[in-house]
Image 1 (cartoon, rainbow, N blue to C red):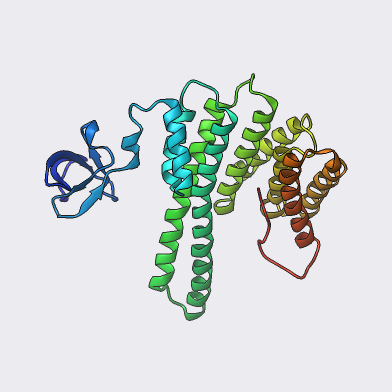
Image 2: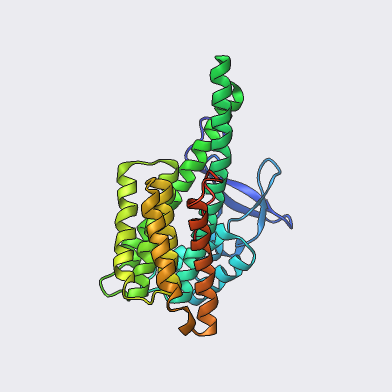
Amino acid sequence: MGAGASASEKVIGVEADGTKVDIEQTAEKDSTWHVKVNNWRGKAVTDKNGLTRVLPISTLIAGKSRDQLVSLASLAEQGERYEDMVQFMESVATGKDVLNITERNLLSVAYKNVIGVRRASWRVYNAIYDKQKSEDDKAGIQSDMFTLAMESKEVVEQELIAMCHNVLRIIAQLLLHPDTDTESMVFYHKMSGDYYRYIAEVTCTDEIVQSALENYNKANSIARELQTTHPIRLGLALNYSVFYYEICSKHQEACSIAKQAFDDAIAELDRLPEDSYKDATLIMQLLRDNLTLWTTEAEEGSGEKED
């Protein structure tokens, strides 16, 4: 698109078999292509520069029932296409019905994976940024690598923050209701605490930290109604303690939360059925790993496990 082009313009693309189709090219940097007719979903078109563009997965959403969207999300999970999975589950979550356990878990898995990739990328970029800054400061210069690392880190930060706010908005506006059942209330408040924590990892403001703390506190208060071996309650304790350790730098409080959850659960472990036993012991092992890490001085850095 030329410098004088409008925000969007119609152009002619050619589908793989040579058929022409009207498509719309947006002014966004990624040159997203939107097909104007439904029967072109999932197909590839060739733009005016001869480059093939595969139409976005969002074209599959129109006209699909709730059950079909859930099935698409499940397929996307199996194919490890988590960006697609997010789009399908956002469409489900913005519907009128309350999410069932399967749908709730699919939403969580989708966002956890797309955010997880960006958290890992940010850590890499941030490490390069810090190393290059130190070298440049010593040399009294500002290198291209420093600038590129800074720009890359900022882009990932904005992606991560925007995605976190999207899921936080969905939870607050659509999923948390006064009549929400106890398990779901704990799940959603824990999830909200987690995503505020992810934002705090890259931009640690008092407001974000307070929002994370409020949600973890609410989840922790309601979780007392669940069994001490309930996976959601244990997962909450695991992530709540990581929040105190990593974000608040309150190491004693982190160890106290993790140890209390572990001790309470182990007292009830023998009474669990086999299927619940496996889920509980998996998270308990993560709690114990963190306690071991936090109570020894042999290792330093961020090696904490989370749910």
